[in-house]
Image (cartoon, rainbow, N blue to C red; front, side):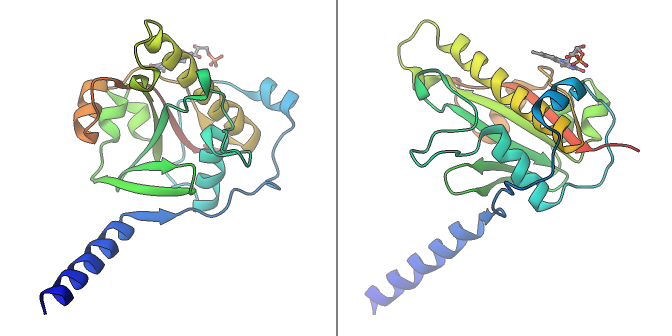
Length: 208
Ligand SMILES: Cc1cc2nc3c(=O)[nH]c(=O)nc-3n(C[C@H](O)[C@H](O)[C@H](O)COP(=O)(O)O)c2cc1C
């Protein structure tokens, strides 16, 4: 009898855990976007966004461009120093915060509630975007390296620029931002002191 109770409890726990993770649509490699020279010409900081939430397909494509798996060996669209892959991407929306899991192309639920103001800090325009991507560098993965924080910052910058170029190419609005309540976000997400929220990109459809 005890054995069956244990099995039932484990099954319940597994269901609860899987409910916390949602699959994203596969990134659409045929997404019609601008060519790279046009995208570079179009890239600019945009601080006004349609309040409409991105479709799941557009979100998947955006996250893949930012830091998805692009090769069979698990390497990513954005390079990382020593291939440490220390960048973590968190999606802040009106509903809550989720973490992008590039290896499985999923979103893992972290917290319920609207914390976009924490990302916006003193810049209200950012809280009006339907989502913000917060770029966290887990610099602990560099070990005892005096340049760890700098390497993390380089890698965060590259991810942010991937987002910028993708948005320019796909007709989305975004801006790279360093402003945010980084300490509050660390606390909210249960991050350690070596897991640094360095940059964020509010993203939304263009206001026509
Ligand atoms: C590292 C970095 C941090 C930035 N932080 C902010 C920010 O906190 N808020 C903001 O509105 N813009 C921020 N920006 C955007 C710059 O203000 C913007 O890139 C600059 O004015 C040039 O404009 P452009 O991006 O349209 O070329 C940041 C840009 C970078 C590269």
